[in-house]
Every structure is written in C-alpha cells, then in structure tokens.
Length: 336
Image (tube, rainbow, N blue to C red; front, side, top):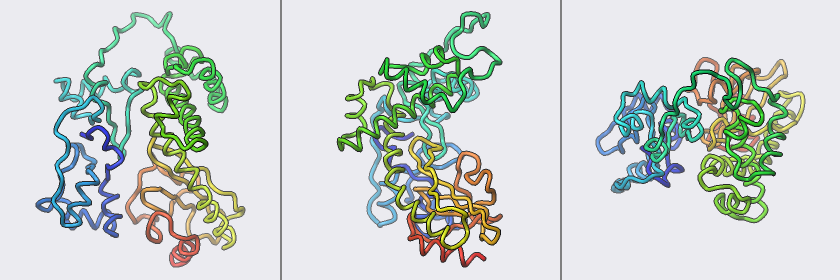
C-alpha cells in the first residue's frame, strides 16, 4: 500500500538500479534488494514498489524510517489489498475494478494499478440492467460516436459550461465509452490547470479551485497537470537533442518530439531516426530513466511505455536522465 501523500516517493526496481548506476537485471542478480534491512516492498504484487525515503536511508547507511501506521482514506491500495479490504476473492475485485465507477479513480504508480481506500471501501456495484434501452453513454457493441480527434474540443466545450462535469456526463452527452470520457476529461482539466499553475505559480489544488473543479474530481487531473508542466519544461532539452540528431545526419528534420503521458505521473518522448545509416530505428526518453534505443520506428514506446532491460536491440544510453545532446550522440556513435 502507498500511504497517503507518499505517491511521489515511490520507486521501482528499475529506479533503484538507476540510482545505483547499474542495470535492473544486475540488481536482481545481485539480490541486493533482498538483503537484510532492505526496505520491504509496498505491496505483494509481482511488480515490486518501494518507498524512496526508506530506500535513500538504507543506501546511505542511515536507520530506515517507519511508514505511517494509521489508515487514511487517501491511501492507495493495489488489487490484492483492495480485495482484502472488501473481504472478497481477488477474482471478484478483478471484475469490479472494470466497472467505470471504479475505473474512473484508478491511479497507476510504477505500472501498477491502485485505488484510493475510500473508493474501494465505499464502492457499491450498480444493479445490472435487464436491457440496454435507456442506458447512457455508448450503446453496447457500438463504437464511439465522436471521432477521437474531435473529442478534446467537444469535452472542452462541455467543461466550459459545467466545471463540475463528470465522466458519466461526457459519456452520456457525446456517446463515447466511459473510459474514453474519463481520459479526455482528465487531460482537459490537467491542461487547463497546468496553464494556470504556470501563469500564476500556484499549486494544482489552487488551480483546480480557481477553475471551479470539485476536489473529488481532480485527483488524477492534479497528478497529470504536474506531469504536463514537467513535460513543458523538458521541451527545450528535447528540442536540443532533436537538433543534434538532425545535425549528425540521423534524422531528416530537427522537429522536436511531443511529450506523452502513458501514466498520469510520467513524461516520455520518442524520436524516430529515419536516416539509413542511423544506429537504431528510434530513441525513447523517459524522465525516470533517461534514454534508450528502440527496435521499432512505428511503435518505439512499446506496450504501456514499460522500460525494458538492455538486450534484444535495446541499449540504455549515456548516464542520468538528461545527458547533454553531445554525450547522447557520442553514446549512439559507440553503438555503430
């Protein structure tokens, strides 16, 4: 479980390996993360997550601090913990988490889905409809009624009229799937909040309040807004890298990449290397891990933008998350 207010401290094994300056597989092979005294994972799932404050203390040889013991409504629970809280089999929660009423509040941390304690505790399954007549949103078996490229503008118009707009409202008004509506609404709110945060130097909560967004509807948007701001700050750096790769002759243009957010709290970008003599099909940048090569020009990020270990055409480049463009080009040159 991720205790309330500590989400920003969460680290994956890949993060810890990068902190140590080694590959994740090297860390796994060494068993250092299983040594006596090493902080315990935050959950029992396959993907191990750790509290960064505890990890830092352990690596520095300091006493590892205890995590807060008191439960909080804003604690984030993984699927095993959610099932345990509701005292039901894991398979039952795996069905329940697909309900739009639950899905709307999912928080992905380190590639693992979590839900606020209060959502897990208070969730009540809606009675099943006997027919699809009168149901809101997208009809069963039908595609979204609004093209994806038009959805942001349509959602923005609805949000202008009603700052308390919900994903259910969007689904009903526009005839799209609830998940589609949720993603579009989160993105629209986040962009507007980021604009205000940038212009007025305010927090996400203050920006949401100024825009009239209800507190209970801005959890994901607040996290995304912070990521949007980080992505904007990364643009000059990514533009410099794109220019360096173009000057080296590996890209046809110097156009900088778009920053993407495969998770609400993550910034990534991909640069296609389209010259025949380029040392790799593409490069991927992650604010958590830095740069790596990719084996596909068409889908350089891969499924879920997961950070793969080195091997099979993937190479981690340079050191740190923002090496200079010169160092990055030099690292790529050495792969040829």
